[in-house]
Image (cartoon, rainbow, N blue to C red; front, side):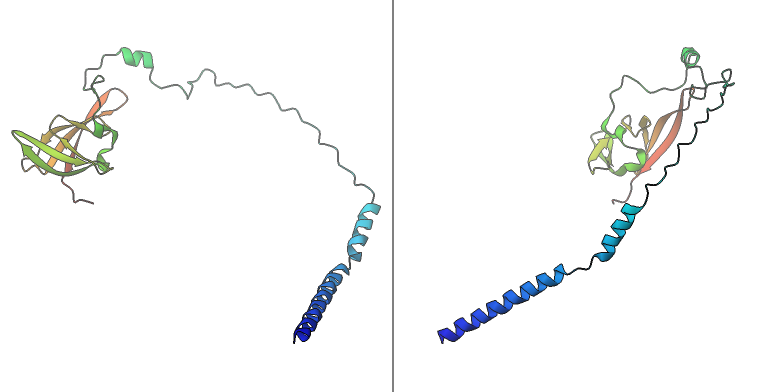
Length: 183
C-alpha cells in the first residue's frame, strides 16, 4: 500500500512540475515585435526642431496721476483731531475687570430662571458650555458691554443696556432676555 501512495505522490509531483514549467514557458513567448519596430522608428527619426523663444516686448511706462487724492487705506476721519475732541456721551469703563459672561454674545446665552436670597433677586444664566451663572442687577454680560439694568416684576425677564461703538463715540442700545425653554 505504501508503494502505491509513494508512486502516486511522485506522479503528482511530476504533473505539478510540468504544469508550472509549461506556464512559465508560455509567458516567455510574448510577441514584442511591434514594440521593437516602434523603438527603431523613433530612433531613426531626426531630432525635432525647437522654436526660438518669443521676443520680449518692453512694457510702456505709466505715470500714476492720483497722488493728490485721498489714500483709500487711511481712515476718513483724522484720528488725531477725532481723539482731541471731547466726547461727553456714555462710554465703557476701561478699568473695570471683565466678567465671565462678557466673552459670549447675548444670543448664545439663555436665561433659565431666577431666585431670591435675602433681599437680592438673582437671575440664572446658562452659557454655551452648559455652566449656570448667578447674576443680579448691575452685572455685565454679552460682547457689547451689556449691563443688567432691570428685572421684570414677575422675574421672567431682564433688561440690558449695551454700549455699541458708532465711530464718533458710543451709542446705548437696549436689549432683553427672557426665560427660555431649556434645549
